[in-house]
Image (cartoon, rainbow, N blue to C red; front, top):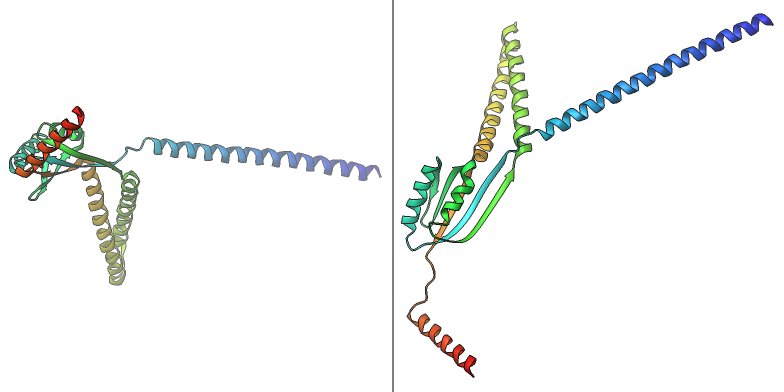
Amino acid sequence: MKLLLVILALFLGVSCSTQRIADRYSSTSSQDVLREQTRGSASEQNTTSTLERVIQYSATINMNTDSPDSLFKRILDLTVANEGYMLRTEKERITVRIPTPRFASFLNSLSGYGEVVSKNIEGTDVTEEYFDLTTRLDNAQKTRLRYLELLNRAQTVESALSVERELERLNRDIDLLSGRINKLKHLADFSTITITTAAPVRPGPLGYVFYAAYVAFKWLIVWD
C-alpha cells in the first residue's frame, strides 16, 4: 500500500512538472509569435508611411485672346524657359508639359498673358499602381536570372529550348512593365497643361444700340 502511494505521488509530481514546462513553453512561443507579428506589422506600417507618393498633375485652362497665334508663341517661350516641351498644338488649343516643381508658377504666369475664363486642376495618385508594377518587375528580373542559370546547366537541347521560351516570355513582360513604369514616372515628373483659346465676345452695331436703349430705359425707370 505504501509503495502504491509513493508511485502515485511520483506520477502526479512528474505530470505537474511536465504541465508547467509545457505551459511555460506555450506561453513563450505565443509571446514570440505575437512579438514577431507586432514587429512585422510595425515594419509594414513604417514602409507604407514612408512611401513617396507618385501623383500626376494636369490643368485645363480657357483663355480669351484676340490673337491666338501670338498667345501660343508666348506660351511656347514660357514652356522652354521652364524646361518643358510642347505635346501638341491645334487651331485653338495647345498642350504642353512642364516639370512638376514649376507647375504652379507656370500657371500663375499665364494670368498675365490674357483673360483666364476658367481653370481646372486635377491630381491623380498612382502610387499603388507604381509600386505594384515595380514589385512585379523586380520579381520578373529575379526569375529571369534563375532561368539563365538553368539555361547554363541544361543537359539536352529540348530542356534548353524550353528554358529559352520562358526567357522570351519573361523578357516581354519585363519590357512591358518597364515601359509602364517609365510612363507613370514621366507623367508624375512632368505636369500636363492644356490651354484653349477663344476670342472675347463683343456686341455688334445692333448690340450697342440695344445696350444704349437698355441703359436709357433703366435711367427713366429710376427717375420715375
